Amino acid sequence: MANAYKNETDASVWSDLASNLRDIEQLIAEEPVHSAYQRFARELFSPAPGKIGWEPKADEGHLDALLRSTVLSQAGSYNDPDVTAEATDRFKKYREDRETLTPDLRGMVFGLSQHSPEERTFTTRFGTLIAKPTWQRRRSGFYCL
Image (cartoon, rainbow, N blue to C red; front, side):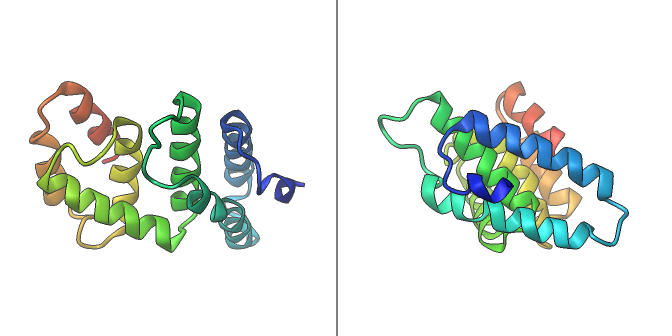
């Protein structure tokens, strides 16, 4: 039934679907079917990032930003290689220029960049976090450690 939502464009629907799929995943985390379930969820979320993209459009509203962060974070957390690679690249760029990430993507990018061996080191991540100019940015980064 979840496959019926692949072409959905509403942020609330994707958010609810993501929450329900996570609840199911927690129930089966130790079961043999878990890896197949993760593959199913990855296939469900993988097309969405290509449709919504990583960059905000000039005329988009807050629900579009919510949709973007939801589908990107879910695709990445289910190990979509394209999304995790892009998140890692964006984290590297962020380390050089703090203005390269929109606030709605920071937490997701920080979290997904941990999948990269070079960005996973505590020293790299902690150094990036303490250099943040505002408490909001430091807080969102610390949540990802």
